[in-house]
Amino acid sequence: MDTQNHIAEAEVAINAPVSKIWEALVTPEIIKQYMFGTTVVSDWQVGSPIVWKGEYEGKTYEDHGVIVSIEPEREISYKHSSQSQTAPEAPEKYHLIRITLAPDNLAPDSDHTTVRLTQDANATEKERDQSAKNWQMMLDSMKKILEN
Image (cartoon, rainbow, N blue to C red; front, side, top):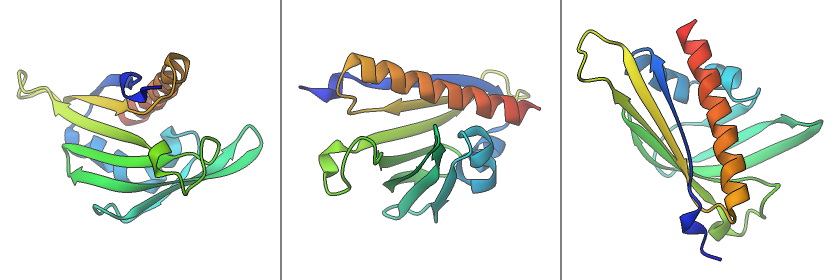
């Protein structure tokens, strides 16, 4: 099945400057607050590993990935594989997650920033919809934390 057509998307407008949102994307202590208690470990360099650790529904997990691109205060992308979805030795099962930040340039005094996230390689429409729902919950949680 062609998984490239099943791209999950999520988006949120946050009343915060790009710098504050970027900090939230790469600071493990802040990530833990909006990403369901997940601990993230990475040095945030292209080619470096990224690991997510936590507990979900009473089970511990450790997901792995690699930083693909990083442009501070603009974009980050990484490959991600969940242990519940695939074995680490199956690179074709990795999702590419891309997060972009777009400040509201039409209002120079505004601190509004749009955060867009895409995730490719969802096997089915149902999987895509579930991924989009989960990412949207995460972005909404980030918005709540950053705006308070």
